[in-house]
Length: 71
Ligand SMILES: [Zn+2]
Image 1 (cartoon, rainbow, N blue to C red):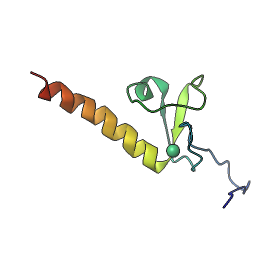
Image 2 (image 1 turned 90 degrees about the horizontal axis):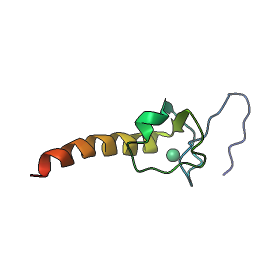
Image 3 (image 1 turned 120 degrees about the vertical axis):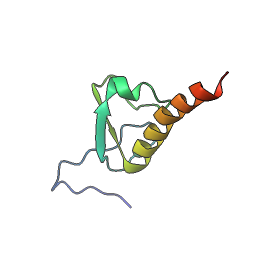
């Protein structure tokens, strides 16, 4: 199923291998804290689909939790 409607300015998720519609955009600096890979890392802001935004949030949260687990 190909979504090629041009009635909106559709942004596609910037994560490598993902072609879902982007729902959020976040700062590249913030994004660098996650382990997600980009199609093009030469951008200022990263567009993320719903799923990858969740992953990003989880990862950035997890890294804090890991800090607490390490003794
Ligand atoms: Zn995505």
